[in-house]
Image (tube, rainbow, N blue to C red):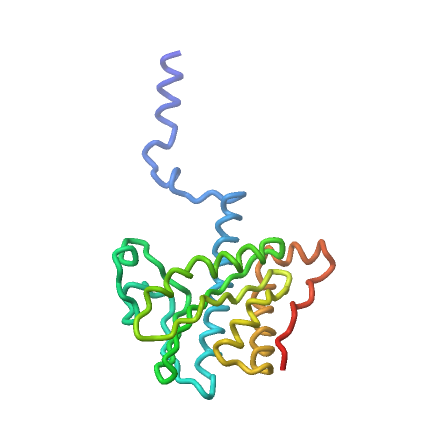
Length: 205
């Protein structure tokens, strides 16, 4: 019995760290892949929004992407804002000529969670408005699109607030929907539903 136990201990790969460090595929691997895909889709939509903001003809915007709020010159820098893991809005856009500041958040979620997350994104940074100095700060704006292509009304409101005309807003939304519906989990749901839902209400001309 002792001889058998010794043989087992000798043959088990204790001396091979890679036996424990090799990534395991399966459910956790699928979860990590989906998580990465969500981040990629979010970043693509964020980049798309940034590009469109730069093309607004009658605005010259200074745009900050995913920067710590406390580090921006428009913040009073109160103690609560300077704590570790402080607020980092997706986009802070400033039109100095018009004395205006916009906080924009991008979100892509499954359709059942669209309303909830659109409201959550707005509420998350609402307190920053009181921290702005020398600028008119608009309430936070949410660009929220579901993975089935549904566009939340807050998206149209946000695009209108920053100065997109109807045609430009529709072009942006068309491209943004493609990004949202390209997520792997979106494909699974569309197969089961027989197609994505149409976009939400359009802005008025």
